[in-house]
Length: 402
Length: 182
Image 1: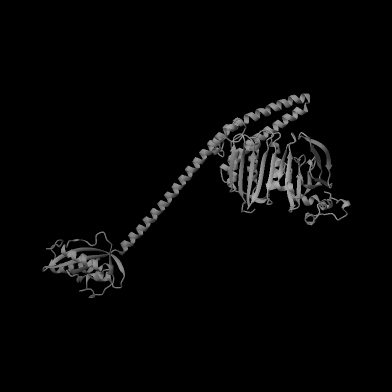
Image 2: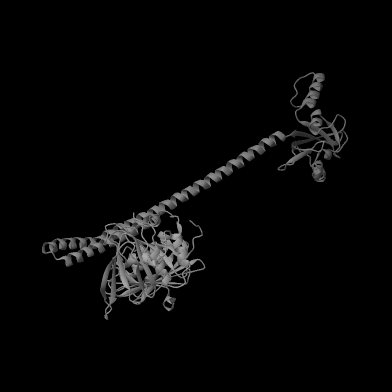
């Protein structure tokens, strides 16, 4: 009695075997040693699109795609030599070829038996089209999910980086502000005590009606208030520029009248006998630039030149416009910048060793550099300690016309 | 505001608009004709006021018209505002108050280089003042109480601007290096 068959009536058993063969959900095919199909069930015909009688006697390779038929014949010879119960094509994808030429994925289980010394190989063919579709969909979903995870991870990484940069920037700003508070408390003390002293003296001279001395102290108070305002303006500009990139507001200017107006305005910042000698080279005098940034940059350089030059020492301002580029040179014959300090000159709060006793924030040149950068220009300088400094700015015309 | 009356000595019709003034200035061949044209100017302050820029810190200057041979500026003074002590080197200039009045102070240089005030006059509305050649060191100021507007004509356009230090008489110079030779 065969394995799995109980005491069933032999006639019925044959009928059951027949039904098992004919109603199986998988295709069953029996081939001989030469690969000729000797038997199959109806499901196999259904899978491969053949009609009853069309497959018997034909080669099993006809049920395979053309490009693997030759290899399959070799595999079949190998199997015949060492037949075993196993899955076909381990690790490889298998495909069947329908009569209409379409290809579909299959899974094949192999077994064998011998009748009258003749080897027969039985194949159990399962159409795995739906399973493949499900697997592919799953793979697509997985891939999509992985992609989304990667994207989200990248976004989070970017976000984390942005937070880190912002945090670092905030830390730097706070450090700079702390430096400013420290610097400002020091720099404010001297002018404030001068103002207080002058106010006391004005009160005393008022009793005697000494107008000349009163006016002298009024002038001194004005000068010190201007110094304090300058410190505050530097800091406000620094904070505004540090916290974002202010957009440039281009407008056409006549550089000669612009500089004459500036010279008129800055005349009060000169020491006695200091002259501002301005000249403009060439005929072209119209250019479109950011008026406020240009004003701040030149003002800073000229007031620095006055501040770090002795009484009676001239300061020169030269402008020219060539090929829509504005060249500005500010030169003085003052104390100059120590060579070792020159590389740090545009660093915020940096002050050269030879000016530590002169009031200043260390922000002016940093702001000038930032303004020039924002206008798309360049700044450089030459300086000889004890002989003076020359700053040169090149500012291109802003193409964004107002 | 009262419209200005052109100087009757010019014997020609008053110039009432900036466009007309610019057209006449552009046709000038001899420098003296600039003065004649400026005498005829009778432009109402109401016409100029929309063009004015008022700066609480400092008088303002704007160019209204310029060619290679002349330039017309609009100067606006708040009460109490004044120019530096300056001159135009070899430039010729005509100053005409069209609103309010300005005080003109003239200076000379002492042998030691210090400034010496030589005179002072009030330029009232409509009065034309000419400045030219070397030695016309001056300062304009608005004594108030109201605003002042002047029309300044320079022939040629300003190429040099010399500012004197009131305390010492030292000067600063504005303009093109080659302007002295013109």
